[in-house]
Amino acid sequence: MRLLILMLSMLVISACSNDKTAEVPVIPPPVQVVLPIADAGHPVTLQQGATVVLNGSKSYDPDGKSITYLWTAVSKPNSSVSELSDPTSPFPSFFLDAVGDFTFELVVNNGEEDSLPVQVTVSDSDGLPVACCLLPMPGLTNVGMVPRQLP
Image 1 (cartoon, rainbow, N blue to C red):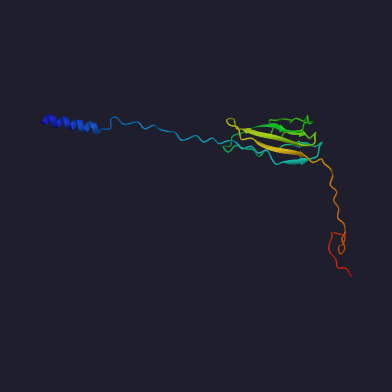
Image 2: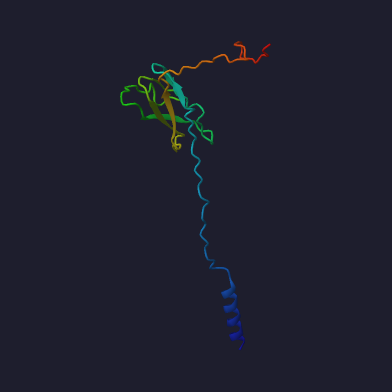
């Protein structure tokens, strides 16, 4: 009987032991990719014949990594033959050689990831001139159009 009790005791102890621990898979936290931020500047309106300088200098990488630039022409007037001076510069220039809208896209890269693309439009302001004039009205002087009391 003692032998039976001893065997049952060993069976209970071995069943409660932690020798065969179930392995819980370790799931690494998701990697959060932080993209660089492209900033192509504000829309510009100039007259035909001007040289336009685009400005991507406010682009940056949130992690402080250095960035490279890539500008591409998305659209331009059919008659334009103008090209960017240096599509990899933060400040490329081009000659506004036609009437219409020129749209450029900027993507920056931090050596690992590309930014989301951003666009800027340069418009030609050449159009029909608009005449504007002020006519003196009774009761107003023509100097600064200040009202005056008539005698």
